[in-house]
Image 1 (cartoon, helix red, strand yellow):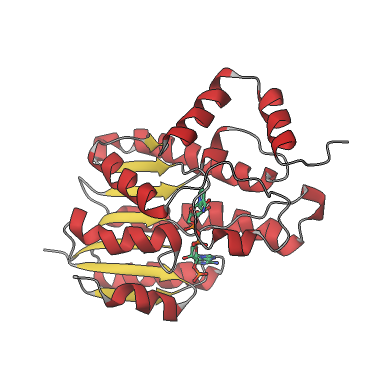
Image 2 (cartoon, rainbow, N blue to C red):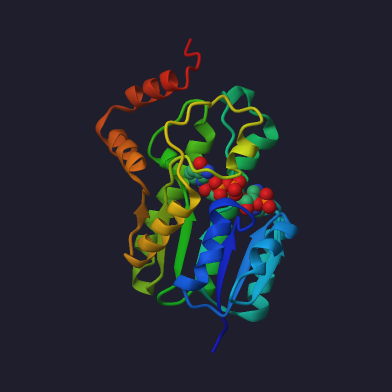
Length: 257
Ligand SMILES: NC(=O)c1ccc[n+]([C@@H]2O[C@H](COP(=O)([O-])OP(=O)(O)OC[C@H]3O[C@@H](n4cnc5c(N)ncnc54)[C@H](OP(=O)(O)O)[C@@H]3O)[C@@H](O)[C@H]2O)c1
């Protein structure tokens, strides 16, 4: 019998770290693989877990990191029961002011790495396995001054739902989680040059995690946790996106001219 594992990227902090900590209580696995850049933080997350942990300190925007992940899977051929893609970051700035490194970095991490991690892990998934991709409510609308971040999350949502449908005959599911603003270190990285300053609601990551496990059990293909998030999602369906963008710019008191 192959070893049953769960893989969590972005496991060093925020939503990914909490998902990793709570995962053994929801999904029986023999080992938990934790991925992010900070080895020290991954070790801290892994410390109190009830299952054996493998820490993989990898920068997923680097080609060799993706190859290293693939090599570990190939060496052991485990049964990947759960894959959670929570690595990601956002910069909120006018598009022509975002530095090249961040502009490419968001696409590299939020889209390219997520896609390749899924692609690499899928051959090791079996009937009943699940892939959880952390998207965002930003996936449902164009977001001025967060244009690229929202576009990367629209990619994650679309990819997840389509692959979920494709994989139905194999019995492998994909769930996209679409959180609203959530209180994590996300803002430490975003805020260095962020022009977004108004947060009408800030969710607790524990709430997002609770709703994620519930959606996994309910076999949903995407979940929008929380009333404010759901209301925002509904408005993006009902209203013209030109109006949705105008309201967002006004809320953030951004210069529109
Ligand atoms: N917080 C929000 O308001 C919010 C709302 C909607 C969606 N989201 C999404 O939720 C997900 C989790 O974010 P969070 O809010 O929990 O923020 P967070 O606390 O900053 O976590 C981000 C995680 O990504 C990892 N990461 C960053 N760059 C990486 C790289 N190059 N290679 C590998 N891992 C990397 C970070 O670890 P290292 O720094 O150690 O690498 C960290 O573990 C992200 O996809 C984010 O876009 C967040």
